Length: 199
Image (cartoon, rainbow, N blue to C red; front, top):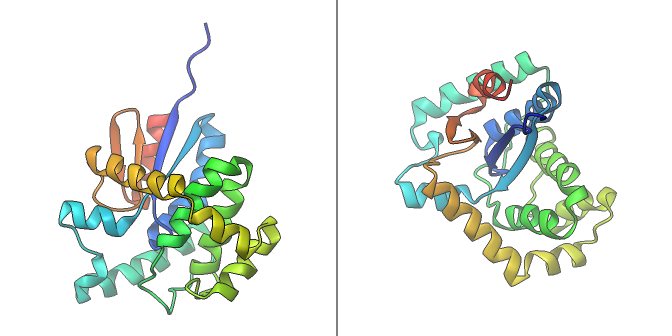
């Protein structure tokens, strides 16, 4: 009898630079361990509100340290990183987009996530602008009109709320957060533990 494939649940928000770092490594970790990746788009602002948490940058000294820490991790992972000049980023539409793509075009989910993460944290684009969003979506075959209709779908809006509520119920307080079974790991610097749990 074959052993069931292990899964890692990945709770994220595009506005988190550490979620970008995690995503730059997680698909490879899953491939190397033979694990499945379960993508869980959530709204980080909703998680913060429900748990009483705040962004690390709300503490200036911590924010300065974190910027340096992220740069060091990006260098270790050998991935480009630019702190987005438009931070903090309102990601509501982008996160609804992740839910909508997952529901309606699941084969495009990973390419969508890559495109959005890279636009924000590699290229420093302002994805609060429709023209910037359209440029990111075009290579994926989405028009801005199609995307706008998708993120306006009540089922998509409800899906993001449900994911966020689920995250809070499971103990999530920030992003990125991972689960392997019932074991929770918080932060991209815990990926070695995620790998061990999957292996």
